[in-house]
Image (cartoon, rainbow, N blue to C red; front, side):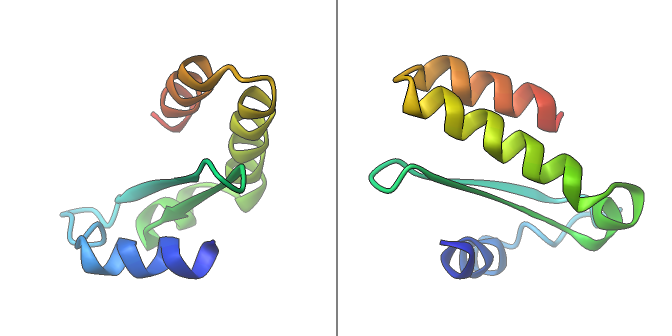
Length: 79
């Protein structure tokens, strides 16, 4: 899942922002896996732990079939 997320991050040019602040939220609903790929500008300003917590929060909501809530809450946390 992480490999595919990183591939899309590159293919979509998410890294191509003025402050290297791109973020890609990758959801694999079939496997209930979530990945967040962040650009180097964000990586320098945060810790991986924060992103792992957001992923786990989304996964917990997906497991409870709270799809809409899980994605909206995750995007708000990313923001």
